Each structure stands twice: as C-alpha cells, then as structure tokens.
Image: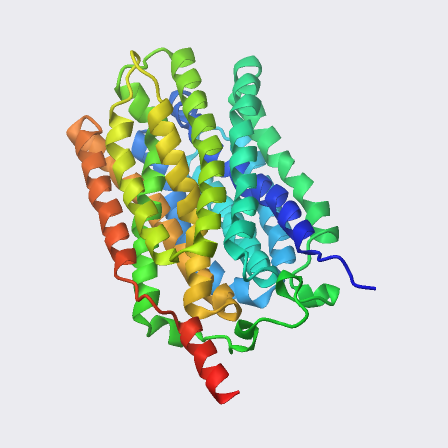
Length: 415
C-alpha cells in the first residue's frame, strides 16, 4: 500500500511553527520601542542598538551549531530562548546592559528556530515545487505576525506593555508539540523521497559543499552581498516605520499606535500574497529574474514610506512593501539551494542568515544615528535606498546557470 506523501503535513506544521517563532516576536517588537523610550528614558540609538549588537555576538551560532543538529531540535531550543528573552523584556527596570543581554538571547533563539530549520526541512521534502511549498510556509509568518497587533495593542492599552511582552514570550510554547511530534527532518524519516517521487532527485546525490568551497565561489558572495543589502533595507523600514510616522505628523499616541497597527497588518497580509505568487513564479520562470525584480521593488518602497501623512493613508506603501518583503526573505534559501544544492543548504544558510542579520540590524542602527544627526528621516532613508539598489544589482550579476545544474549535467553524462 502506497503511503500518502507526508510533505503536505511538513508544510502546514512549518507554517505554524515559523509564524510563532518569527512572525509574532520579530515583526511586533518595534511596537514597544516608544514605550521603552518613555519608560526608561533611553535614546533612540540605545534602543535600536540591542539587535545589531546581538547579531554581532551571535555570528558564530549558525556555522558552529546549525549543521550539527536536527532542525526540529534547533526549533525547540530556539523558541525556548525566545521565551526566556521576552519574559526578561517584560521585567526590565531600565538597565541597558540587561536589555542588550536579552537581545542576545532572542537573536540566539532566532537563528536556531527562525528561517534556517524551516528552510532546510522544506528544501529536503520538495524539489519540483519547492518555491510554492516555501511560499506556503512563509505565509505563517505573515498570518501570525499580522495577528500580533490585535494581541499586543489591547494588552498594552488595557494592562501594560510588560504584560504584552510576557504573553508574546509564552506563545512560543505552542511550537514545541508540533516540532516534536509532527515535523520530520527529511523524507527518509518516513521512508519517502522528495515530492513523493518513487526515487530521490538527482541533487540528493551531490556531495555537501564545505564552508571553504562556498567562500571561494563568486555566486556565493553575490548572493551574500545582495541579500545583506536588501534585508538591511527591509530591516530599516520595519524597525523605523513607527518612528517615521511620528516624524511625519502622527503625534497623538493612540493615533500613532493605530496607524502602525494598520500598516503592519497590511504589510503582513500583502506579504502572504507576495510569498505565494513569487513562490509559484520561482518554480516556473527564471529565479534570478524573479529575485532581481523583487529586490528593485524593495528599493522603490522607501519613497512611499516617506509619503505617508496623517491626511493620507499607509495602504499603498504597506501593500507594495509587504509584497516585496514577503518574497525577499523567501527567495534567499531558494536561490542558495539552486546555486549550491540542497545538501549544502544548511552550511550556506548558516553563513548567509547571520550575515543577513547583521544587515537587518546594523542598517537600522545607522538610520538611528543619521536621524539624530540630521533631525529627520529624509537623508537616512536616501542612504537606505542606495543600499537596497546595491542589493538588487548584486542579484542581477548572478550567473544564469547554477552549480547544481552543472553537477546534474555532469552526473547525467557520466552516469
């Protein structure tokens, strides 16, 4: 009797755990920045320094730990660290050193339980429809992240921001039973092959590439630089959006909270559409073209952010930015798997994700410093626009044929 392909359960379960581990904590943390500023009298650059500092201190986590452990175990360990970090955030008394240490715990957890384990699992379970499957998994980030404002805003306004932080932390527990009892690392764990095929795909036989090999490849550096710059631009927009709104006339706290909540929900809803469409496109047309176009759209959203005013609405900016953001994150592991093979994905992403996190965090910090220097967000966002354009150009320079394509062709000729 033929077993039903278990991959669909991997996708559905990953959709949930990815949303819990990343969608809720990452996309909703900026909501609390102005509360930190008012409660602890910290400066803007002090508040935004936590994530970039933690990104530097956790650079070793990906290369050292990710290739050595089961993705499911990484997921459980990472969400546990996120839980501890958010409980700590809820109990802060104004000691900035404690704040930075909690960011270290959160970032450690993010690397272990965020994109990497989910990308690795899905890439092993799917090849022909990998983009579509990855798109569905990333939908979880958008759905759970978009639900965040409905959770944290009433909790904050009814009780306190501390209560909201505490609840976000304990939501992480919901990922544990799914990771332990539903998710499986590879199709072989269920006696199956990728896509439910009768035999394994050719790329499974390609030997995993070493870190030294990857670092010698020009495409690896182009993908690394391109994703670093684009993710950095996205991070700057996400981290500063609420503060940009405040600069542009949203001075009433309730109005500012409402505008941020509306924009965040529309961004994350639009990201769902972006992930599904771009995932499908990446299975059917040139991934390089899809990725290049997406990265240029990211750059184009920066002027749209600066156009949001109390007399208007954030919808157009939010929809365009959300579409590009959703596709952007998802395309990186798809391109890495295509360029270097699924067996090398853990090593490739173990380097790419921590470096991307540097961009995701240090570009926003740079924006904070520039904002304090120039007194507005005009110049800082122009700099972000240039960074985003560099990212798009880097992807444009990727070679049309991939290491995987060439390896399969060689194997076919010698087979």
